[in-house]
Amino acid sequence: MPKPLIDAARDLSSRFAGRAAHWDRTRSYPWENVAALQEAGLMGATVPQAYGGRGAGLQDILPVIEEIAKACTLTARIFVEGNMGAISAVMAYGSAVQKARCAALVLAGEKPAICISEPDAGSAASQMTTTARRDGTGYVLNGTKHWITGGGVSKLHLIFARVLSDTGLEQGIGAFIVVCDPSKGEMPEGFKVVGRETTMGLRGMPEATLSFENLRVDAEMALLPAGGFADLMSAYNTQRVGAGAIAMGVAAGATQHAIRYLKERHQFGRPIAEFQGLQWMLADMETGVSAARLLLQDAALSADTFPDPTKAAKAKLFASETAIKVVNDALQMFGARGYSDREPLERMYRDVRMFTIGGGTAQVLRTQIASRALGQKLPQTRDGHMLQAEPLAAE
Ligand code: FAD
Ligand code: COA
Image (cartoon, rainbow, N blue to C red):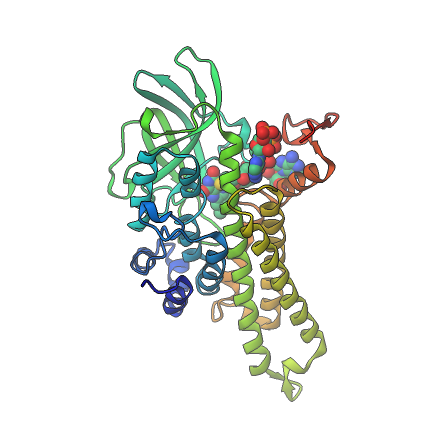
């Protein structure tokens, strides 16, 4: 009988917390944590049992994300991407061959890279220009993806591209599974890692630019090549829930640090916990974390079908904005000490800042939520012009 996932995470969390500053300072990838997650059965835990996983649901995974994120944001991202996002898309829409191949990789500890964003198509992801042209027994990919989390260390890539027939007719957006090992220089012809960002937080995680020049992909590795952007984004909602849960976990961790310090630090002859100004800040922090947790649970419960895709958007939006505020307030409670690396708060603050940007910005998520509430497609997410809104077809 395998250990419950949450117990496995608790066993590892103090080890993860102890090395979090090291990965940040050295900007190095935490391979030893990846191995620990894999050994504990935490990578690929959402993979169905038929493919060797534990078939864990998102609601089972949320407390695990929170536990790991309190200790190390970087490791929580690896855990999330080893269980959600790309792997969710393959498990939802892939062929048996694709599922078996990808499941084996994540169960062996792989954190897949999901490749959507491009230099000229970030929020406007549907305007991507990477193409996959049908050619004989496969497809030929050309284009550039940037801000690819894990680019250069991940082996499994899910590359979104505009699919073209052999005569150049557009079929819609599909995705292509490419397996290679850039960290060992084992790359197929036409696939290059061409740059890495220097980031504010989550410094141990490569954010890379990948280029594809006549990269050949076997047809067997094409996912929804007849055009499946809506389905792919629907599967991507799992990663949005995961990202929100990381942000909430970091906020919960920062709150715990703050509570410790409120009792420890004395000014004006008493613990600073006795100052009402800080007590009320703490009350708002606690309330924000609890509210975020509930929204995430609600989104996770509907994860199998996502009848309302805005549940993931609302949960990520609220959790990410709340987390930035909570971590900032926790840092404030430490005074100057919070601004130094003697405490983890300054790292947590830098780490958590990305969650209103990556995986759909706060503005784009608000647009998605408003569009659903109004029952209208809002054209500002289409052509870059504020055109008149078109009514949605009746459901
Ligand atoms: P832009 O789209 O250029 O937006 C600029 C500003 O305009 C933002 O404030 C935005 O909110 C606003 N804006 C844009 N459109 C609208 C609108 N219609 N209405 C109102 N405001 C609008 N991508 C991947 O594919 N894979 C990854 O693994 C990945 N990992 C990432 C990790 C990190 C740490 C970060 C920071 C990004 C990552 N991304 C990844 C890219 C991420 O998804 C994009 O950064 C995001 O979608 C926003 O795109 P952009 O940065 O080009 O901003
Ligand atoms: N969940 C479920 N379905 C979704 C979805 C989501 N999160 N986002 C989009 N869709 C569906 C839409 O319902 C629509 O379906 P339909 O064709 O059946 O009507 C289809 O996908 C296209 O969506 P639409 O909003 O019309 O797309 P758009 O061309 O205006 O593009 C997005 C807007 C989707 C690109 C934008 O809202 C967005 O999410 N940008 C952020 C991209 C991102 O998260 N990148 C992360 C990279 S890691």
